[in-house]
Length: 260
Figure 1: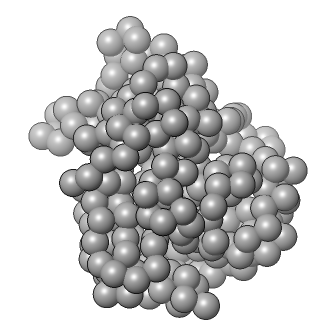
Figure 2: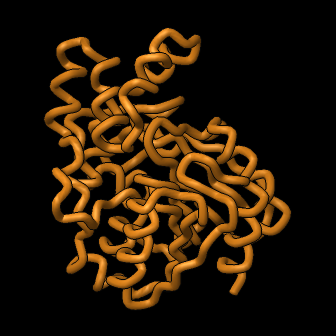
């Protein structure tokens, strides 16, 4: 494990593996650098790339300086890229993809970017995703489990009855432990509408990935994101879905795109 300091002094933990051009992995909601998909992805990419797999602020071994702002997370990614040599290709999963897109729009030194199903909402009849304030308020009240439930049901479309059965599982305390960072995801998603004007100014090649077994919401969002980006293409990953990714298949798609 290594650390790099972000612009506000927050220590950001990362693992470095492999050799070759730098690739930075950006996790989504709940994920830290020990997430099984990301560790397997790093291992699969390592023969061709130097992989930087980091803990976003508030998770794992990274710090968490208050107050939170999306700009601070962009600075965290910039700090990891600086550590990687000043420029890198980047992969972001779910809301981590949305964060990476925001970083690209801010001019962070990303040469190529791949994202998997950034969870925007294209259905205008649907209410906005849970807000940073809504989730953060529940956490401040000590209702971390309720914050997780709000994020999962209203933000990730998980049935409430499914979550009710999960609260007693052994892994649930670990889920609640990162509940405060779900407010960060909410801030990044900002209600769920695609910031088309900002994204239209991104001038790097972008690969937007979506699974063939994913929900209509995620499929529509991937298409919409690809449509607003000036240099993007959409690629389907056969048999994959949100939260159900085969790291080997993902690594194959990323390797081909990053090496182009």
